[in-house]
Length: 282
Image: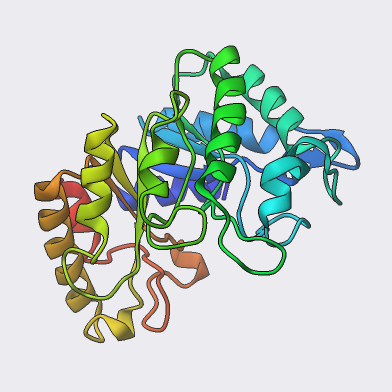
C-alpha cells in the first residue's frame, strides 16, 4: 500500500499511530530486472508527512511477495548469501547492503527488520539449533550496523515455540550485539497475556533488550463476534501487555474502506473500527 492508499489509511487511522511496518522486499524494488526504489520512496515520504515512522522488513519467512517459498535451515546457513530467485537481481544479503545504504540517513526509518517471523527447520522438518539464527543475525545485523549506525535492528520473530527460537534459543539469539529489539506476535486467543509472553519479556530483560508486539490480531468471529467485542479484547491486551513490560504494540492488519474495511471473518481493521480508539488512547 503506497501513495494515495497509504495516505488515506494514515488519515483514517488518525491520532495515536506512531509506527507502521512496511515490506521492503527485493521484488518490490525490482522492475523489469532493474532496481526501482519508487515504491519505497513513496512509502517513506507519505509516512513522513503524517509524522509516522517505519519498521522496514527486508524479507518474509513464508515467501510472501517473493518466489523463494518457505525459508528452511539451508537458507539461513548460506542461501541468503547466494540465492537469486525470480523477481530479484541479487542475493538477500547484497540487497540488504543496497537498501540500507540508500536509506541509512532517513529518520523516517525506525528500525531494520531482517525477516518477518524468522524460524528455522532442517530439510527433514527437525528444529534447527539456536546457533543457526544467531549466526544469521550476527552476520546480517553486523552488515546493517556497519553501514547504518543510526537505526535500530530487529531479527523479527513470532516469539512463541517456533523452531529455531524455541526455549532458551530466543534469549541466546536476541543476545546478539547486532539485535537491538525483541519481538512477539500475538494471535493466541482472547486472554490478555499469551502463555509465553512473560517468559519472552523476562528473557529480553535478561539481555537488556526492549520488547514490542509487531502483530496483534484476532479474527472478529473468534473474538466475540462483533467489532466492539474484538476492540474490548484489544483493550485488555494493551493494558496487560504494557503493564507486563512491552514497549509497543502494532495491530494487524489494516484494510482501506474502498477495499471493504473491517471484516467479521478475518483480521482486517478499517475506518471507524472501535479498535482504533485503543491506538489513540495509548
